[in-house]
Length: 415
Image 1 (tube, rainbow, N blue to C red):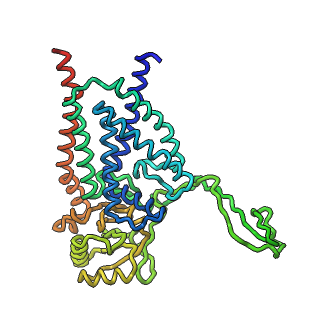
Image 2: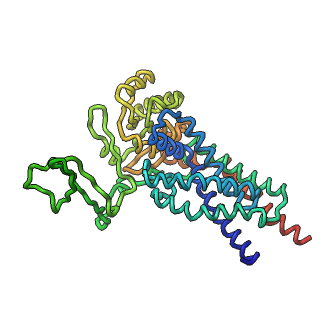
Image 3: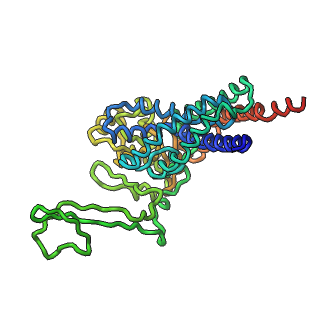
């Protein structure tokens, strides 16, 4: 292979790997709590449910920052030997792991791109199978074709990328995701997201029945099932998905009260704002957040607004929390996975109107003075203010990168 062709091939693989890791790391930095939920799901599936939530959160944040920083360094040619080694280590670890996950299927979605892009476990493994050889070659050729970039410039570029990933991760840990890829993002019409189009493809399934007679176990389907022979004893049913059907963006949105009465339609049809305090496990919620939630509940009731605490905790736990809060909280019970998808902070405040998500807050960022008077306009104003510092810092860092990569180089060439 000619040296120039080899170098071009190297640069192409370097950029491809860099873009992959920057994207994968960024969507995880945006939502580190979502990554922690996925890590916890794996631990539970592997019987490691004793591992604390705080460790899952730390692992998620560290993985996000490492992925983004390594991919960014690879992309701009900074510390190429080290960054290519980190990328290769990631690929060497996750490729066999995703093969195991594809075969054992402990969790249906690997979470490698967060909620931004959903891949099946087999799609994830084949994706890794494509990029693993690239990571090997980039690492092996990194000394030979490392870009001629001064050390101070490499340090400056790497520091920019690292700082961006840390800032975005901190934002994700202390607030709802700044970019919401989930099906309950602000502006979502829940009723429309739950509907199935008339021309939507239907799923195809094959069901087999295992029956036993005289010690022999045999499989039957609906065509040859021995309806007339009662000597066969039923053992089990197996269903295999032949073709996936259409799945709505929101497949479950069910809320019931302590008496077992459903309130789903009430939440989706109200023309007045309905306030939902989302707390998947109310006993694990932040104590300061619970106090603020109780104050909001009292003030909402005084203004004639509906306020529900949505949780998957037991009725006994809810009764204890209500007694400790000193407020008459109205609890609704729902699936824990759905609640974790709706909001990341515990508790979080979501506002529904006509079945549309019009606002969503981290409990620490609810503006108590003006929120209940105008939930929508207050939310939009809050976004504008709360992201100012992050936008300014990120723009400054991006400007610095452009300066180091382009203008400094041109200035040197002109001299």
